[in-house]
Length: 449
Image 1: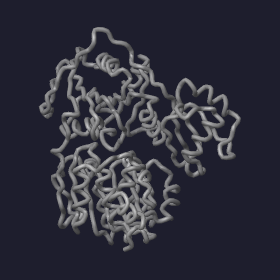
Image 2: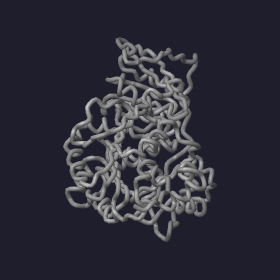
Image 3: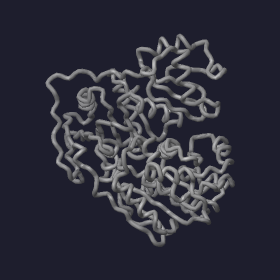
Image 4: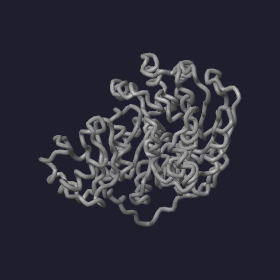
């Protein structure tokens, strides 16, 4: 096994993983991440328990890198996750690390042919959801015998969603497997035998959650339908990033429509949406085009969106675990946040809320939430059209006559891209680019609906 010259140079000049941390704008690894690296030195499997938002992605990606061979041209590692959003998030982090290793992402709702073309290159790391990965293995698109390391991220969630059959098949197909890394935000009572754990190290950092960064509050709704109270809370939030959690998909769309009628710009997100619509909704929320996301518990895990200020539990969480995972969207790492429970006329604070919960104090006069300052530009071209972020920035600043400060977050997908543009400038920009080409191609562009 040949160590990567990249890592040798990096360790000599700036310490282990120094260049990667700099690229990710992280000053230092935390206690949990360092413990994972130390445990990786032993020839044992690892079970890592740590709170949502504590940095588990790096806690398994960095050990993964230590186990990978820069000279190999085969697939060496696989990460299985319960949702496409989590798969995309991990892929984005890995690409941002710029390690020199290739990566492919596989999930349902995406063209299988696109993934098959990516898998032909035998990427060093494959990230995906259980159903799609099992499908590729059955079709022979993934050579399981070369995979030495397996990560089961948010493993408890995969079990909750009933992926036992797919997981058992995938793990049974990895005949060369040497190391397993399991992660979860909560303790896993029974790890199934098909996982193949023999001698493992348990790293339980769940008690190290910085609960002081998270404030728990409650507010009473006099009406069983809590819409009026929700609107008051969004006025209080004053345009700061807020996630509203509901227990049912039907409620999500109903609440979103009601807020829209009240003039509150928002996006909604649940599991029955088309993949493109889900990606669009999350991008609008990440880039500030919408500061309110109305969602089911699908968004309680796997979304890495920084600086979420408020979590509003429109419907009370059904379990303590759901409460923990919802709240994990805010107060991430060193940031602070507030979780607010809306209590109906016959509801009380659930017994699983162990922290002190204080009542919300509303100001005597409420003003409507601030309108977002950004719009989202949809571009009907992406990676497969040889379009990248640099191309988009150059096109919009040159042909669209925008300044750099008029551009926000840009994301490039396989066949489409999204760019945040300052709302006050997007009409002017669209007029300037309507007859222009990007990389000598006429590409459809417009405000994302």
